[in-house]
Image 1 (spheres, rainbow, N blue to C red):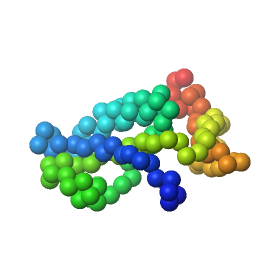
Image 2 (image 1 turned 135 degrees about the horizontal axis):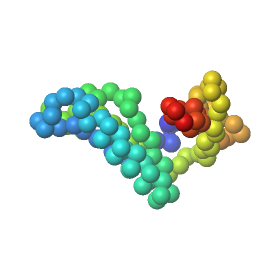
Image 3 (image 1 turned 135 degrees about the vertical axis):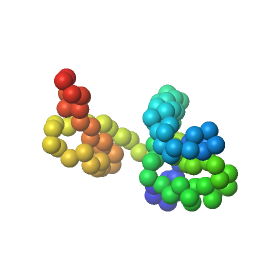
Image 4 (image 1 turned 90 degrees about the vertical axis):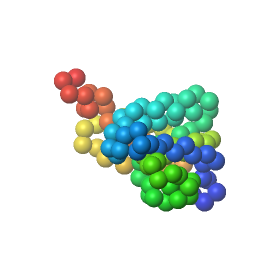
Length: 118
């Protein structure tokens, strides 16, 4: 985010390697939980962003995580800093986010184009 627009809170979801040491074993569960958290945030008038691209070692050092904990997912939560609009796109159109008249536009593929045997 732009300086001064950072979300006020983050949730760091970790895997306890003492329970299971296969990194990513609980990835689907983390994704489901992350989505549930962001949906709940939306219902509360907040915005959430699930972040999967981060430096896990830096997060561990910053939070002083025990050696057996690995950060797998980060969720940023805060008040929306901008208006967003989801638009359906046709097959082959770009999925890159963009801004139009100050609105953050999020292109999404149509359901019939992402489900096999629709």
